[in-house]
Length: 388
Image (cartoon, rainbow, N blue to C red; front, side, top):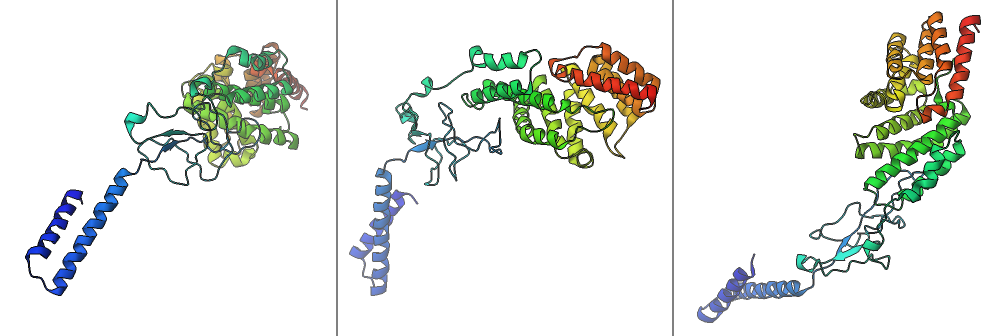
């Protein structure tokens, strides 16, 4: 009810008391009504004169398990310089607008303060509450010199797993210095995940399907469990941000297959994880030449080793044949030979393995395991020729 109507009610009460003869009960009712009107008017006056409380703008990062390199922590981030503060229970996970209410439970660390009156916004303090500097002086952008050491490690011929781990650490350190929603951040997530993938590839023979045996050893499981969740989380976030970026898609598909390997092939194939694996492989085939046909290799490998009823050797062979049309590289020819071998087509298998040994790798990532692929191709030839 507006103060105008309350004032009229109060005036009517006073007139009734002055001009009319009222019974004791009527007089008591009118007095009570008048007192209530006075109380409401006084409270409204006090509320109107009180200064508007400041609005706190704060921001938190997406929650993910903080384990190892690339972890996106549930920490608050300064909205100007994007540095981390300690995680606080109950921290708000959105940016508050000037008209939003602020409760005592809202986090007031790393914050700006603005008033409800839009005209006062320009005059509001613009310094970071936890850092004594202006936001324009603490926003950071990645330069070529910042990433030069990491880039050199990744481009190094004959790079090692230790080189790639070091590069991942450097990229991740840079990631913490930029705006979490910037293009620089997305690019650094891809680079960090790619470096982690390379470290896993070099440490676990690229999870290449073997002529006999399996890469699923306790040592390899330990490596995948250490790096794959972080690589998958970072690359997935990058791909969601840049869905038309083939490198983001291939990095995520590669990281996810390592992460899936920690769960076991049969469990993957017979649950929803198998469908997700195929969906990622199909998505990557939007760019057939990315990583020399990696999307086709992932799909073909699934049908080659999946348990019944998903196993489909003929379909696997057809997919590998398509991959060799895209790029007749060492890896693709090896998998072609492997499919022929599983189908009992020994002559075709030997021909593919021989071509494999004479072909170069199709990418730097493939070069990480090129020697291992060659060793498996020689085992394939031996198996065809001598049945061993």
